[in-house]
Amino acid sequence: MPIAGATAPVTVAGVVTMNVAEFLAVATATQLAAPGAPLIMGAGASLLDMKAGTFSFGALETALMCAACVEVGHELGVPVLAPGLATDSLHGGVQAGYEKALKGLAVAQSGADLITGGIGLLHGAGVFSLPQVVVDAEIATMITRLLAGAEVSPASIMNDVTAQVGFDGDFLHQKETSRRLHAGEVFLPEVASRVSVAAWEAGGRAAGASARERARERGAAAQALRPRLSAGGGGSGGGRSVAARAVAGAWSLAAAAEALGPLLPEGVRETLREIVSASRTARGG
Image 1 (cartoon, helix red, strand yellow):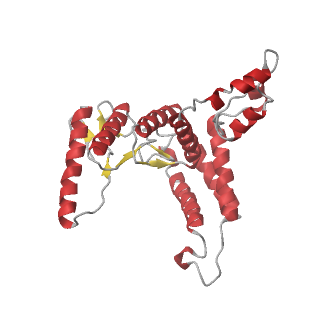
Image 2 (cartoon, helix red, strand yellow):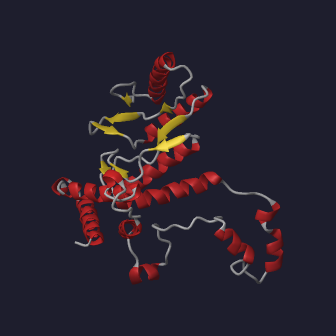
Image 3 (cartoon, helix red, strand yellow):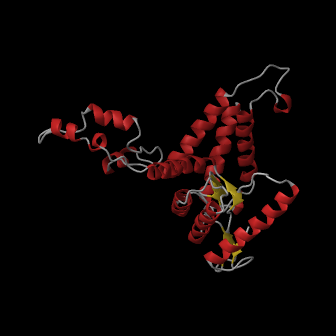
């Protein structure tokens, strides 16, 4: 995995060239050992931040590197895997939002065959956050909607409905409006808020608080709905499903991360405390 300015040239073109060269070298060795083996090119390029001296996975240039690798890979006839919703932010917030959205959109629009990395992750891939999973799901859904484009046809132009509405009607009460809303014509966010100032003052919440609440709700729901096997089955999972064990693992991760609280920003510590509290409540103590 080339790192611009450290293990690879500092330019986008230089990093892409090295990434492709590394893939071709491994592909050659693999085909010699196992002719015909299917391969996917990884485009996980990053850069060295010259101010902080740190590894950066959310920089804009990494999005350009990934997009260029996708184009080269497709020219070679090879599917490409690229990281999408990456951020260097240490906690969920403004930086995490714009870095994940910009890189995710650029990589998705480039036509990457598999987009990995980023869902629920902060600080590159060093911090996992359950509330961030909720936010990232919304970002990914927004990107999907953007890339779906817009239908342009006589039906979508809706001239017949416009004629029915006339000059003194409205489209709100039209059946076609309702039908298209249910079909996904308009993206409706769960975390982001579009309420009025008055509604916000009466009981609005920040996006972070909304994401934390939804993470707690979904975690509790997963705990409550997990299938239980008979006493004689389930193997090492103790009768729990893979999904249930994954949720339990997430709680354990949060509990372990809580011990690092003094090293983390207050916002992150608050999130961790809430996750651990919710997990204990779901477990009955």
